[in-house]
Image (cartoon, rainbow, N blue to C red; front, top):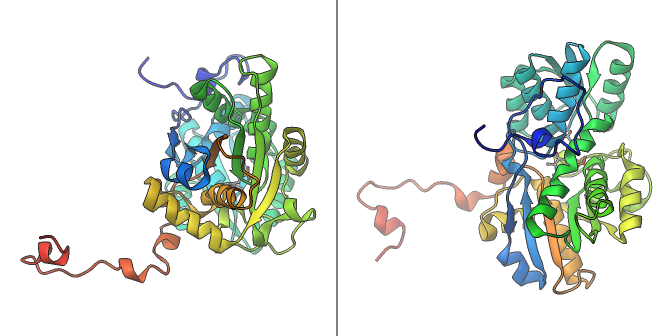
Length: 351
Ligand code: F0G
């Protein structure tokens, strides 16, 4: 069989599926663990980026979706539904298309990045815009799935998080150990819960003999875990994590407490600075929410909470092409310059 088979086959002993089920995969997982020399220089730590934008639909959601859609197909139900800030819906739409299932998505009106909407459209999802935020969408999706023959594929579906654990396995498989610290953006809190379960699972089976401290970062306008209470009207430029009432609240708190980690918030300004730095210094184009982990890394390095010399992995969760509007906004200086065909070299100041 050519190439990487996707996470269900690659981690068959850890990602169970129903007997006889047909695996629905797009070849997700096996994403780069990329050394980040510029960030390492800035922080005095050995920093790696887990580049999840390299997944088939451009985000980490594919790791959970291959499992959720494989289960949904095996169940015999013909439709799946999810609430989403954009990436879950793009992923659900793609895997459902692959499986021949109908996919319905509930998204907050006007608050999802254009690339993600384009994906859901082209993969043929039924898209419903809700006059409300992600938390309202999730409540509606849960209600609909409870009352009708349709599978909920949000991360409240536990098999999603079993699939997402594979990112932690991959990190350990490459490093030969767990990192000292793992930094993540936190929205609905499923991913931090999944990583922690992955790391502790590997440690329990003695595949590694350490676990990382889990550092979870939220946008300042949507930081319920940092503030210790739900946020009614979450607001941030990082629309993927514009969430006020995370479904996996307890899992995230457990991950922080058991790992000796922390939650912290970063401003939209800090997020955008990290977003530009990743692109311009590391060559890695991520969506704004993904830069939250790096904004948090820089914050804790500055205030002394990031021990020098530690091995740190920052997950960058989604691809920059998801949200071209944010990339071009406020960047007047990168307006393409009109050039005379005879004057290219002069326009570039080439000798
Ligand atoms: N980064 C990106 C790019 C995301 O899309 C999300 C969540 C997160 C981080 C946060 O992960 O929710 O597990 O804490 N996006 C969900 C969605 C909510 O609908 O696509 P989390």
